[in-house]
Image (tube, rainbow, N blue to C red):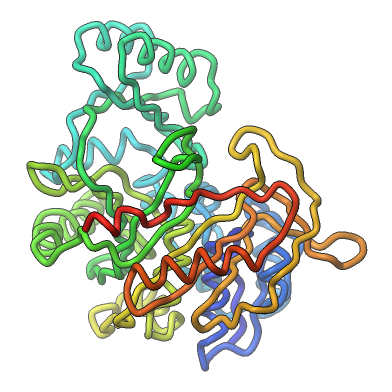
Length: 423
């Protein structure tokens, strides 16, 4: 079969690599792709939001199956557009992708269906938000309602920071229209865990757990980013946590969406906080996490096409997900200055040691220059991932592998997976 993957980051590279392992697949296209993806798929210069062009391409090339990796096209309704043209596509429809597209919607959904989450209020009027802050307990969390590249969340330790945060999100519109509505949420403490799942509208199958590192600097300092590294599985995701989440969060979310007439098919990403009062939902995403996909997918034993087709066809109950009994750690190599400002166009070397079995180099922000050389082309450039017998082994291997890669202005955190030592 012919497969089209929509997206251009490390997540899509990980998806393409999994798709390439499928015995069913003879040809992979990726739109728009990147320099690394181009080594296993044919990259097509069509943007992820150019729905009409993507549909035309899928028809022209007789694509059998399309996989949408990114949040923007899913929230924008790409699945509805493809389905209307009779094309088979993996991902939630627009009315289901709102689970990620609107934090206010997802919070209201959790409240209505008693799914554990932090206390909150939604605001469309900045003045009302400021009045609420006057009596709120600090610290507090402000969230832009819409998509903001994983950066629209502000943790405010003082009232002054919260007032400034309201200005940033709602008045200065730093995150654009995503800040037209804002969620103010109680601050939760505990371990964060990410859990990815496949969903076919009624059945949910849980993938291996992971843990992301959002802040730009060591020791969780600096600005929020799209993710500076991750590891899988999380030692804090215990059997007890799993049983609680299966009972009160996972299936409850799928059932709630179905009850609202928003049948969800695709991937639900559960961002969890393990609080003293038990696990609570921090956020939902309507697709694979990035870089969580880079540590979860390399450990999955199943044929990814079998699983994704089962999600689309409503037969996920016939699939048993299997993961290797090992661990993986991903360290993101970024351009110095990310996530604020950074230079691009620097040549990258050192790819030859990665075997795509135990060591992986997932491209996020790369391109080919006029001389055919791979160069930096984004804030997050590469995700260096290694598998090991356990997390400490995988972490040591991943950091050793970061030394293989060279480019000017290379930046990374040095404490990815440090929490493993405390487990």
